[in-house]
Length: 80
Image (cartoon, rainbow, N blue to C red; front, side):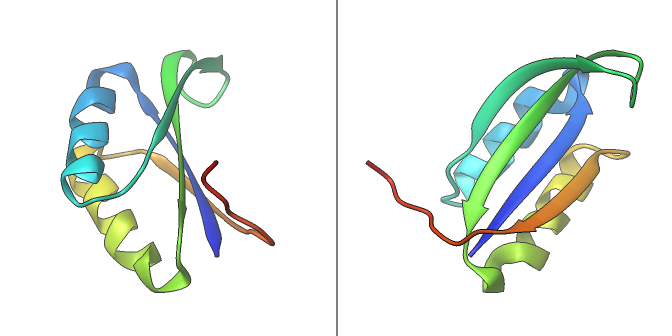
């Protein structure tokens, strides 16, 4: 299991979320501000199987050029 964290500018956030949801992925969207883009941005959290990582990064790459992508291992992912 992986947790993908994407940081993108607010302009691309809605299109990115829509593209991910259309592919059946669940996304948590957080409004954030930080030094990376030096303005308001959006952080997206996506929990998924290892085999879905490359496809998901590709979706975000097209929807939000310049986004920051972080990948973390997850011990547990459970929808309650």
